[in-house]
Image (cartoon, rainbow, N blue to C red; front, side, top):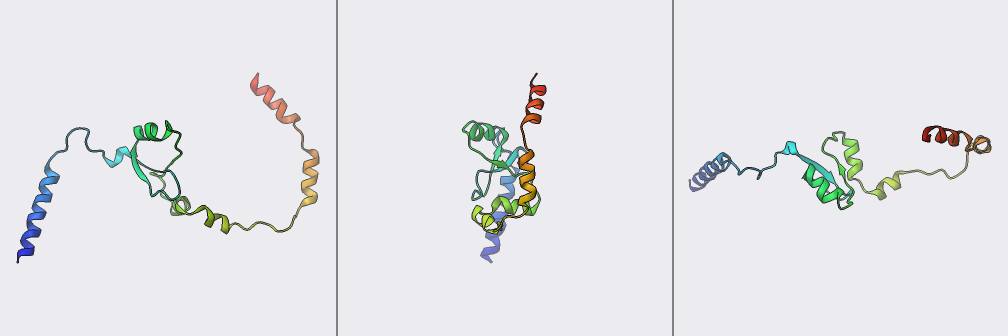
Length: 122
C-alpha cells in the first residue's frame, strides 16, 4: 500500500514541474534545433543554427545535418563503417572495353574546354 502512495506523490510532483514556466531563453524547442553528425561513429548532437556556425564552421569542424533525412537507407549508410562499405565493393579483375576506351582517349583534347572557359571568363 505504501508503494502506490509514493507513485501518486511522484506523479503529482512531476505535473508541478511541467507547470512551472522556464525562464526566458533557458529552453530550446526542438523546432529550433538541428541534429548533426561529425563522423560515422558520432551518434549525433542537437545544436542550434548559431552553434553550427560558432562551434563547428568557425573551427573548421566538418559535419552533416541529418535532421531532415528520413530515408532509412541513407541514415544506415551515414551510420555504417567505411570498412564495411569498402568490403561490399567488388572491383573488376580484368580489363574490358579497352578498344573503345583507347578510341575515346585518342580523340580527347582541351580545345573545347579552353574555348568555353575563355568565353565564360570574358
